[in-house]
Length: 172
Length: 194
Image 1 (cartoon, rainbow over the protein chains, first blue to last red):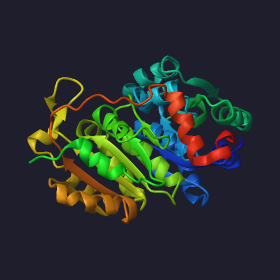
Image 2: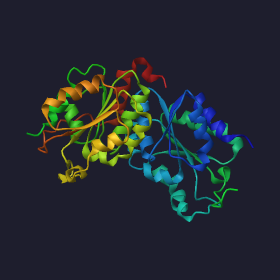
Image 3: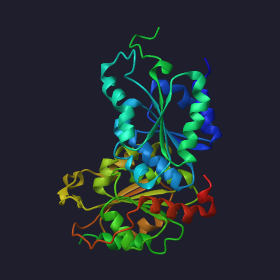
Image 4: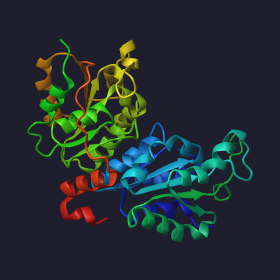
């Protein structure tokens, strides 16, 4: 299977994304490490996902590109902050790892996971899907271009089937 | 004798040079506009709680410019976690001034948490701001101004101001216009290069 987190990092790096705000998800763990290790990037933990919407708007005002990493449960935290993208036309790139899909073992992840695509659409954010590792390069490049060249709000939803399912068993 | 918010903001923004300003929604945005509408002020009409993080993204993108966030106590309370996020990176060019009237001024003057004694400056200090104080006297404003323009940040000032309403002085409402004019004024011809 292609190394999809490395491919996502390559897309961010190639397209000059410099500020990366994140609230961790196990599915994003490797991409977060890659962003921290990239000396051309500022990887910044956020206390809540909506901070990343403000961070990205400020970065753009200052002439830089930003991306925001989160899991689907964090999308609900962004709703009002997304006013910035809708009203001001700020470009926005969200990479969202999906929880609550097939195989999920924490039922509390299901409601927000189910609502995520529609919640983003209602807030004016276009969504793209990444289901298969082989499609990472093409899909990531498309998302970055939609965000920064067309200056729109875009969320790349990374399917749980690609990330895997959290087992809730002790690590051996 | 409480401080007058318009006078405080006018003192901070006169002869502003290359200062970049983010103004939180409501009265702080009107205060900044009353001091003179400016393309390098980004006033908010919504997205409550976002002023500090917008300032953070801007400060990280423009490390050679000074960035000032002027916001209200209610707006800052909604984005309290952003003080912790700023504390991770501690950009030296970022200042936050909270005009603290201890009220939600746009919604009927209900008391905010600061009216009950919540100390925002202490929160900022605990989050690692280089300097964070409550300011109550006009004699202190010159020092605040000096830190905003030249101090090693991030700095945070919770300035206690009177709750009497001031005349409305509104900035443009069109967010696209506000975004574009800011980038053009800051980045020049690069504003159209993505």
